[in-house]
Image 1 (cartoon, helix red, strand yellow):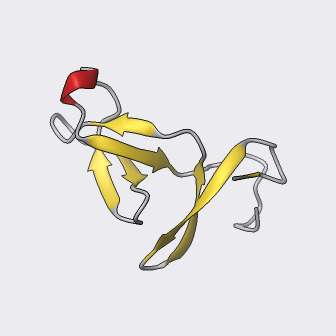
Image 2 (cartoon, rainbow, N blue to C red; image 1 turned 90 degrees about the horizontal axis):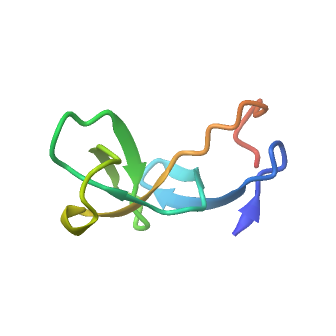
Image 3 (cartoon, rainbow, N blue to C red; image 1 turned 90 degrees about the vertical axis):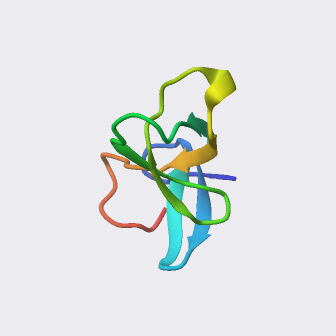
Length: 77
């Protein structure tokens, strides 16, 4: 893991079909039911459209949210 050079938060880079994406380092549980309002990346680079709230025992998996640093002027973390 590394830290964002703009805000200092821990980040990870995940390889996707379109290149590396910068994500927050803390994994989140996701659920596929409901009205998907978020996209996350799995550790193997797959984009999942999901919701991030639900019963833990019914979660569909774990992924990472994209890092959206407000001080970021580019993707050069």
